[in-house]
Image (cartoon, rainbow, N blue to C red):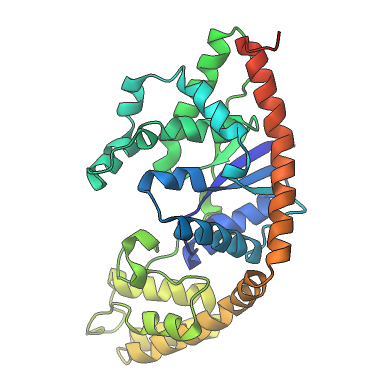
Amino acid sequence: METVVSGIRSTGNLHLGNYLGAIKNFVKMQNENNCYFFIADYHSLTTHPHPADLHSNVKQVLVEYLACGIDPEKCTIYVQSDVPQVAELYLLLNMNAYVGELQRCTSFKDKIRKQPDNVNAGLLTYPSLMAADILLHKAHKVPVGKDQEQHLEMTRTFGNRFNRIYETEYFPEPQAFNFGTALVKIPGLDGSGKMGKSEGEGNAIFLADDPKVMTKKIMRAKTDSGPEKPNQEKPEEIVNLFTLLKTVSTDDTVQHFEDVYNDCSIRYGDLKKQLAEDMVKFLAPVKEKIDELSSDDKYIQKVLQEGKEKALESAIKTVKEVREIIGIKPF
């Protein structure tokens, strides 16, 4: 059984795209692999979040992942900062990470453009921290998006460099876990691109959204003036609405709106109203679970404590062995 490690951003609510994309695959992976899923609160510190926001975001993200089907009995789910060995391995890896290679990292260049008044060392050494997260459990596979592929390559570089410097084969070379066609792409409500929080609150349907909020967002989704001739090709914003409809509605419903679009009698208000009703119904079980878990602090504490203990078992072993390889030993 292969070890899989994946980070969970601690920056607030999950949306429909997260749920039907990566999380659905995580649920499948936990049945087939030795999975470690961690909430990356250390990583979020590069943006200096308010303490109250950081704490509440960690809980919210954990609750939503559990509501989506992540099972703490089948995997290890923990908070990054609960495992101090993350920080120690991060420090040790930084000793063999070179400033030039860190400065050339694409994500670092992007971040300093976006936050020129907060170019901190955490941004520069983000790849080292990500490598520590992965190598701490000696991962074989890492689910990554396109924007993280360079970081995974740097993780391999740091692991291989450690092996070479200390003449060992201690760290395996983690490979990208590519979901391929299994990774569903959900469009946003703004008429272009994918659903995402970074695109604006109105672009995404969040799992914790109240049904009224969800409906309001969908009714405001971008459309055009309607087809002018039969079987006209749909513009991108209309394709996006039909993609969402196909995701949450019945085949009969989708076919009905395909037919009225093709004969130029479609009313987008009717389509949006149907989409909103079906979306609310589709996400109702997850929303109910989120509400239930949010008020069960005792269960949340239990999950985090057990996750911490399982993560520590692996982390303590790794750091102990790394220290011995380096030569940090008691006298």
